[in-house]
Image 1 (cartoon, rainbow, N blue to C red):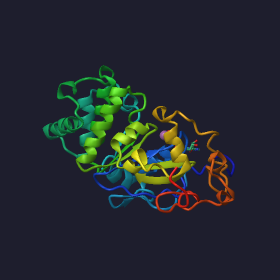
Image 2 (spheres, helix red, strand yellow; image 1 turned 90 degrees about the horizontal axis):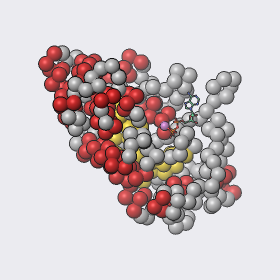
Image 3 (cartoon, rainbow, N blue to C red; image 1 turned 45 degrees about the vertical axis):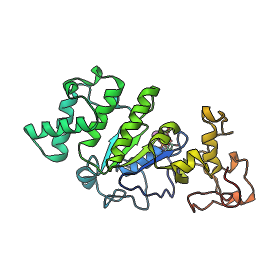
Image 4 (cartoon, rainbow, N blue to C red; image 1 turned 45 degrees about the horizontal axis):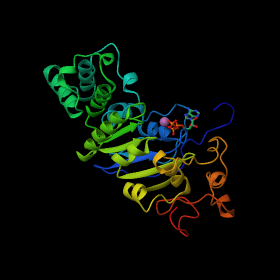
Amino acid sequence: MRGDRHVAAVTDASFDLAAGECLALVGESGCGKSVLASALLGLLPANAQTAGSAVVDGVDVLTADERTLARTVRGRRVGLVPQSPAAHLTPVRTVGVQLTETVRALTGARGPAARKAARDAADRAAFPADHLDRYPHELSGGLAQRAATALALVGDAPLLLADEPTTGLDRDLVEHTAAELRRHVDQGRALLLITHDLAAARRTADRVAVMYAGRIVEISAADDFFDGPGPRHPYAAGLLDALPERGFTPIPGMPPELGDLPAGCAFAARCARADARCARLPEFSGGVACHHAEETERV
Ligand SMILES: Nc1ncnc2c1ncn2[C@@H]1O[C@H](COP(=O)(O)OP(=O)(O)OP(=O)(O)O)[C@@H](O)[C@H]1O
Ligand code: NI
């Protein structure tokens, strides 16, 4: 940022994701989820500084040059399911034409072969073939979502990245989108699902990663997280308790400014269990970053 100031948008994030697995990345607005996703697509702003590595199917996307990213990563190794399909699709071209263009760009196929590959991608995303000649504004929200997913599937990328794919959709459509994303996982793709919607995460994910103030503070199996024994990090427990069906109890206070983080645990100021140890940054170990995780009952 201007002057010498900087924002630690994502710090020490470490996780792996296997084929056929879905990891849900959850956390409050501004905690760094989308920045992490942008890093995996090589789409960080030009002034961003990175360290470490993020290997997707053999390519380190943090150090790869623009040409490598454009030719081998975006669409080919990582398929993006966008947050707002209506804004992602080109308004002046039909879905079929957009799909065919994407096939050409990613596979080099031409003519009938390209059109067949476009129809196949539509089919895999459950987009109806008789709607391929429609323009985006002629589609319902659900069909626009499937059209955008079809575009993400064209390059047969082993990793799908979905940033808030269910935001703004009504309940039926959320269920539907979650089920369809899960189907792609069951067919062998890896899915990083970024979401505010814990219900959608529960429906789709094998594991849950909770992010707070730029750090992953807990990673656990979705079954453990949602159904018991429950989250181990007090922040993760707070997120669950804030759900309407779990008492609607908000976490007191606000997350810290990422440009002005405390030296110790960033959650301590809002945490009922905070004590002197929390002035020191907790190590991430055994799936959780909290000084209290080992010695007490799960919260
Ligand atoms: N180019 C940038 N310059 C300065 N700060 C940035 C930049 N990009 C992101 N940030 C900051 O990084 C932080 C993380 O943003 P990010 O968009 O990843 O949050 P998020 O978890 O995706 O939130 P949301 O749930 O609202 O989408 C925010 O505090 C944001 O202001
Ligand atoms: Ni975001």
